[in-house]
Image (cartoon, rainbow, N blue to C red):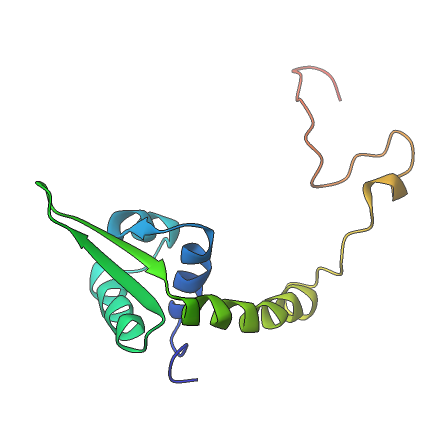
Length: 119
Protein backbone atom coordinates (compact mmCIF):
# COMPACT_ATOMS: atom_id res chain seq x y z
CA UNK A 1 0.00 0.00 0.00
CA UNK A 2 2.98 2.31 0.51
CA UNK A 3 3.77 2.08 -3.21
CA UNK A 4 0.30 3.14 -4.39
CA UNK A 5 -0.81 5.19 -1.38
CA UNK A 6 -2.01 8.71 -2.04
CA UNK A 7 -4.71 10.25 -4.15
CA UNK A 8 -2.75 10.50 -7.40
CA UNK A 9 -0.44 7.49 -7.70
CA UNK A 10 -2.98 5.06 -9.12
CA UNK A 11 -4.16 7.70 -11.58
CA UNK A 12 -0.55 8.28 -12.66
CA UNK A 13 -0.17 4.53 -13.22
CA UNK A 14 -3.34 4.39 -15.34
CA UNK A 15 -2.19 7.37 -17.44
CA UNK A 16 1.22 5.79 -18.05
CA UNK A 17 -0.39 2.47 -18.91
CA UNK A 18 -1.71 4.02 -22.12
CA UNK A 19 1.66 5.43 -23.28
CA UNK A 20 4.78 7.19 -22.01
CA UNK A 21 4.09 10.81 -21.07
CA UNK A 22 5.99 13.98 -20.44
CA UNK A 23 5.42 15.87 -17.20
CA UNK A 24 3.08 18.42 -18.77
CA UNK A 25 1.02 15.69 -20.44
CA UNK A 26 0.58 13.94 -17.11
CA UNK A 27 -0.44 17.20 -15.50
CA UNK A 28 -3.14 17.72 -18.14
CA UNK A 29 -4.34 14.11 -17.73
CA UNK A 30 -4.79 14.66 -13.98
CA UNK A 31 -6.76 17.87 -13.48
CA UNK A 32 -6.36 19.14 -9.93
CA UNK A 33 -2.90 17.76 -9.22
CA UNK A 34 -0.27 20.36 -8.37
CA UNK A 35 3.18 20.34 -9.95
CA UNK A 36 4.75 19.78 -6.53
CA UNK A 37 2.61 16.73 -5.73
CA UNK A 38 3.00 15.24 -9.22
CA UNK A 39 6.77 15.65 -9.10
CA UNK A 40 6.94 14.09 -5.61
CA UNK A 41 4.77 11.12 -6.61
CA UNK A 42 6.80 10.52 -9.77
CA UNK A 43 10.03 10.56 -7.73
CA UNK A 44 8.54 8.08 -5.24
CA UNK A 45 7.28 5.77 -8.01
CA UNK A 46 10.68 5.96 -9.68
CA UNK A 47 12.44 5.09 -6.39
CA UNK A 48 10.10 2.10 -5.98
CA UNK A 49 10.97 0.83 -9.47
CA UNK A 50 7.45 1.40 -10.83
CA UNK A 51 8.13 4.34 -13.17
CA UNK A 52 11.09 4.92 -15.46
CA UNK A 53 12.30 8.49 -16.06
CA UNK A 54 14.09 9.05 -19.37
CA UNK A 55 15.87 12.37 -19.75
CA UNK A 56 16.85 13.24 -23.33
CA UNK A 57 19.89 15.43 -23.99
CA UNK A 58 18.09 17.99 -26.12
CA UNK A 59 17.40 21.70 -26.13
CA UNK A 60 14.91 22.32 -24.65
CA UNK A 61 15.31 19.39 -22.23
CA UNK A 62 12.77 16.61 -22.63
CA UNK A 63 11.84 14.05 -19.98
CA UNK A 64 9.44 11.14 -20.49
CA UNK A 65 7.94 8.89 -17.87
CA UNK A 66 6.91 5.31 -18.58
CA UNK A 67 6.03 2.19 -16.66
CA UNK A 68 8.73 -0.32 -15.88
CA UNK A 69 7.86 -4.02 -16.29
CA UNK A 70 7.26 -4.03 -12.54
CA UNK A 71 4.87 -1.08 -12.94
CA UNK A 72 3.00 -2.86 -15.73
CA UNK A 73 2.44 -5.89 -13.49
CA UNK A 74 1.22 -3.56 -10.72
CA UNK A 75 -1.33 -2.09 -13.13
CA UNK A 76 -2.48 -5.61 -14.01
CA UNK A 77 -2.90 -6.34 -10.30
CA UNK A 78 -4.93 -3.14 -9.84
CA UNK A 79 -7.31 -3.88 -12.75
CA UNK A 80 -9.71 -6.01 -10.65
CA UNK A 81 -9.80 -3.24 -8.03
CA UNK A 82 -10.78 -0.75 -10.74
CA UNK A 83 -13.53 -3.08 -11.94
CA UNK A 84 -14.80 -3.42 -8.38
CA UNK A 85 -14.85 0.36 -7.99
CA UNK A 86 -16.78 0.88 -11.22
CA UNK A 87 -19.36 -1.68 -10.16
CA UNK A 88 -19.72 -0.89 -6.46
CA UNK A 89 -18.75 2.75 -6.03
CA UNK A 90 -19.84 4.27 -9.32
CA UNK A 91 -22.92 2.05 -9.36
CA UNK A 92 -22.26 0.99 -12.92
CA UNK A 93 -23.08 -2.62 -13.38
CA UNK A 94 -21.60 -3.97 -16.59
CA UNK A 95 -23.34 -2.50 -19.63
CA UNK A 96 -25.61 -4.84 -21.55
CA UNK A 97 -24.50 -5.56 -25.10
CA UNK A 98 -25.61 -3.04 -27.74
CA UNK A 99 -27.92 -5.63 -29.24
CA UNK A 100 -29.94 -5.61 -25.99
CA UNK A 101 -31.30 -2.10 -26.64
CA UNK A 102 -34.88 -1.95 -27.89
CA UNK A 103 -35.40 -0.75 -31.46
CA UNK A 104 -35.30 3.05 -31.53
CA UNK A 105 -33.96 3.25 -27.96
CA UNK A 106 -31.00 5.55 -27.39
CA UNK A 107 -28.62 4.62 -24.61
CA UNK A 108 -26.58 7.15 -22.64
CA UNK A 109 -23.28 6.19 -24.29
CA UNK A 110 -24.61 6.16 -27.88
CA UNK A 111 -23.29 8.81 -30.27
CA UNK A 112 -26.28 10.80 -31.46
CA UNK A 113 -26.21 13.89 -33.66
CA UNK A 114 -28.20 16.73 -32.15
CA UNK A 115 -30.28 18.72 -34.61
CA UNK A 116 -31.84 22.04 -33.56
CA UNK A 117 -35.59 21.89 -33.34
CA UNK A 118 -35.83 18.07 -33.47
CA UNK A 119 -36.04 15.59 -30.62
